Image 1 (cartoon, rainbow, N blue to C red):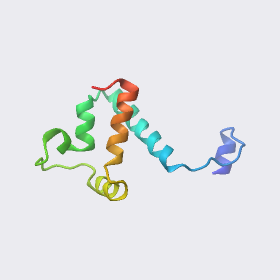
Image 2: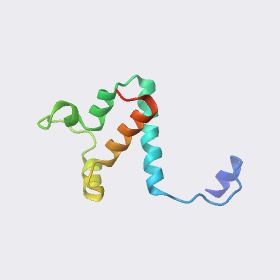
Image 3: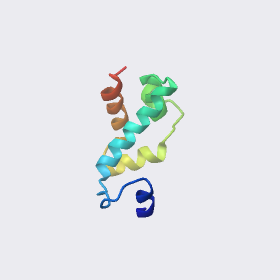
Image 4: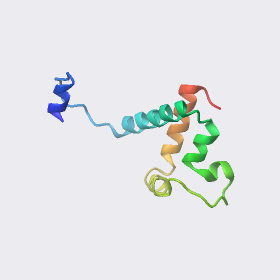
Length: 94
């Protein structure tokens, strides 16, 4: 990565890898990508977890593995929470 960093003008030390900050940045990027497509908050919620919008018996899922892994690791579907919090912060809720 160092040669690439130098190619784009960075000559400092490597950045510290912070998984929490990375998760927040990814959530903000997900939100920024959703917004230009004209997605509403409910449409974004549906993409993240259709059952969250349609009810617990809804037969479709989009990110089952991610959701299950995060519930096991963090006790919650962290990506969903972070993306929705980023939406509220960046675009003011629904």
